[in-house]
Image 1: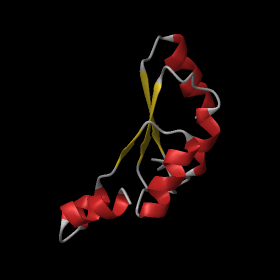
Image 2: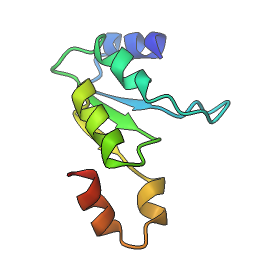
Image 3: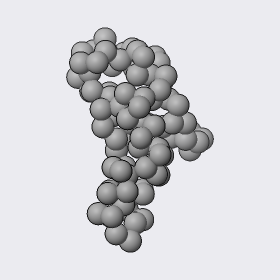
Image 4: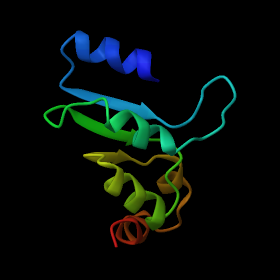
Length: 90
């Protein structure tokens, strides 16, 4: 959230991971990257994590300014992970 992002920046973080999954409720909010990107200087890498399940989600994160995405569950469940990666990067 915003407070954790501010603390990470104050500590000199070179990269910040944004976990879209609230670990208390397990709800996913992809808009979190969109909100936090505005607080993170461009020289600090922003990694969008969790809840990315489609090429549209990956594109949304790219458009929000994420420098990278972390995809776990989707690839673990994919019959063909390489094909899934190609789909995400279209």
